[in-house]
Structure formats: C-alpha cells, structure tokens
Image (cartoon, rainbow, N blue to C red):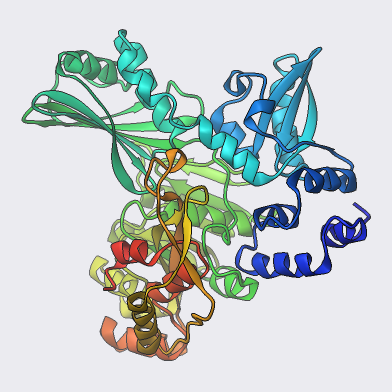
Length: 539
C-alpha cells in the first residue's frame, strides 16, 4: 500500500483508539490468521459501518457492510458455492453489464483474478468491493444445505442421484453412504469425520437408484457382488465408488475427491507455527520422512502441503499417487494404474533425476525397500504409512521387513496426526473451564512435564446451527506429534529397542505426544476438551 499498518491508519483517523488496537493485537496472538479489521469487528470495538468504510478508504477500495438485504441476485447462478468459499467472494448485484462482487481480502490477487475471469466468461465486468470475512462466512453459510430438502422432490431418478451428490459437495462431505434398509434407503454424509443422515428415500426407488449408480460409475448392471468404479461426470471431482451386497440390497459408498482443490499452508493444517521446526522436519536430503495415521486422518493433505512448501523451480519433484488428488503446478505427478504398482513406478522415477520423491503410501516390503534405497542415493523421499503414532512407524517398518540398520540410517522424521473438529465460529458460546476440565489438563501437563497456563482461559460450548449441520463444529484441524530421529533414537533402533524404550528416550529429547498439541489447541479456543477426548480418550 505504501502506507502504515492498518491499525495505525485507523487510530490516526480517530476510528479506534490505541487501546483498541492493543486488544486486537492480543486477540491476534491466538488467532494469527485473522486480519486486523476483522478482529476489530469481532471484538465490537467500533461501529461496523464506520469501520468498513474507513478500511475501504485506507485500501482505496469500494467497501460495504454486506448483509442479506444487499444481495439482489441468486449468487449460485454466477459462481458455484465451492468457488465462493475458496475465494471468500460473493456476487451481490448487477447493473448495466457490471457485476458487484464482495471479497474478504481484495489484496489476494489470485482469488480476485479467478472470480474476475469466471464472470468475464459470462460476459460480465467485475466491480470489486471489500467487506468483513465474518459477513462473507455468514452469508455463505446460509447457502449451505438448502438442497437436502429437495432430494425427495425429484421424481426422476437421474435428478435424484445428481441432487444427492451435489448436496454432498455443497455440505463439504468426504463420503456418501447409500444404504438399503428393510423399509427405506438411507442416505448419509460423512462431514468433518462424522456420519450424519441426510434423507431417507422410499424403498420403491431402490432398484432405480442402484441401476443409475452402476451406470454412471461404469459397473456391471447384472452383478450383485462387490464392485469398484468411478464417476467422472463432475468436472471438479473424481468420485470413487464401492458397492457391496447386504441383506437388504446393495450398499454404495462414494468417496468425493476434489481434483484441483487448494493446497493449504502447513500451518493452516494445525502444524506448530515454527519455521525452524518445519525446516528441521522437511528441508532435507538423503533420507525419508513418513506421515503416519489411520485411514481418513488427513495424511495425504499434509503430504501435499509439505510438497507445496518445498516446491521451487530449481527442484525436481515427482509424485507417485493412487489417485492424483490435487494437481500442483511445477510437479511431475504420476497416477498408479492397473499396469504398474508403486514399486514399479518408483523404479522408473529413480531414472528421472528427481530431487524429491513423494510416494503416496508404503504398502509392502518391496515399495519400502525401494523408497529406502532412494533415500540412500541422494534423494529426499516423502510417504505415508498406516499406523497409530510416530513411534510405531519404526515397529511397522520392522514388521514390513526393513532392517534396523536401514531404518536408523534413512528415517529422518516420523510425523503422525489426528483430525479433530473445530468449534463452529457461528454458534459457539464462550464459557469458563469446569474444575474437572482444569484437573484433567493439569494432570496431562504433569504427566508429560508441560505447564499449561489456564489463567484467564475460556473454552466453548458446541451449540449447533444450520451452518454446522447442528453439530456445533465446522471443519477440522490436525493435532500432531513429531519424532525427529536423532542419534540417540538411531542407536536404540539399531539395538532393536522396543517402541516403549524408544518413546521413553524421545520424551527426554523433546518429543511431544498428540495430547500435548491437542491441549494447546483447546486452550487457544480452536476445539474443545470433549472433542479431543472423543478422538484420544483421555478421561
């Protein structure tokens, strides 16, 4: 801007006081992704109309305190809900071929350009405005879930299946379960890791629904045993389909994978905001980093964010995936098919002069051995493995058949994670911690030699509203544990020490288990102790 920070400009104009700015900066410490203007609005330190107009003036942008009555058009006729969410943008009015669009951040040139070009293709010139992110989020929230009530109104089976799938996309579902029961067909969505019933459909439509699903996923109509297929009708999604016969018919599970989703920064995922730690963990050569977790806990998303962090023009990065979930510019991405396994593809990749290799998953001894060999010959390898925590990665590699010597010499970082639901910002109610909750936190601190400052800390009650599907939670964040394989850990591995001995030594040298990171996120107001308990069973 060529101007002073926004807070100073607002003080100069008499919009807020220096004390207000100090309060906002204090709030920003625990909410680092929030902008100053949004924080001042959240804390209600100034009249919102005056504040947004002042911000617009400082940034030399059109400004509006966007509310429902300001929206004169059907937003979804101009941009999809996905695009609106990704770019924090809402079209709200049209005048003489010009469409007014409100952004939460007009300085994000990439987002502004994505929306501008999309609307230009529709023959419309974009006029951009700025408003508060909270207003954008609220208005987008009102658009979610409106399609569910229309599912049962579809007489046409093609329209019915299409509505089920599109509603799942709008609701941010990762999976759709279509389940024949005795007297009905139940449709459930997995949202933020939790299954919830969307609708029950008349049993009479079951055969038609199954026939339509098989047709669009390229399955055999006559077969009733288990089948796998894919739906490629939706340009932004790759949908994997699995069918299995049960006593009331064939059950279908659809896994929704976004083809070109935005890669989140590693810190946005919940990784400790510490550049030095990131470099220690990932900026390496001649070794392997493994991300470990059970199925559905976000391993692949974390791998993508690491790769995006490391991606530079002077580095050759090749990925081997099944399937390629997100396409990233500058990467050589290989998708596994029936003709080649991970190990076959990895052998070929080693002849392609890579600096960094991402192997989607270590599934067997052959893939593990080639990955280890790649690490020994000057490459940096990133991969995932199914196991319960970062120390058990060592045990899992042993069971696959990798020698203690190879594990000790090549494994540099073992990272494990779990996903916990974020408290819904729209309906959460602030409250004090109970004495029982304080005691649980103190006991965890004592067990792991950590001091958690409870002074003045608040937590939140998960209430539930339309935007969070009445769960009280909206989206998820990872809690991490990181094992840096130092010389002491290497020595224990070569001596075939047990995971108990390795964990004990790791705790002495800075390793922190999931629960420590989880408690910090509870104290920061990101999630709740009950949500943490449902994931880790701590009391």
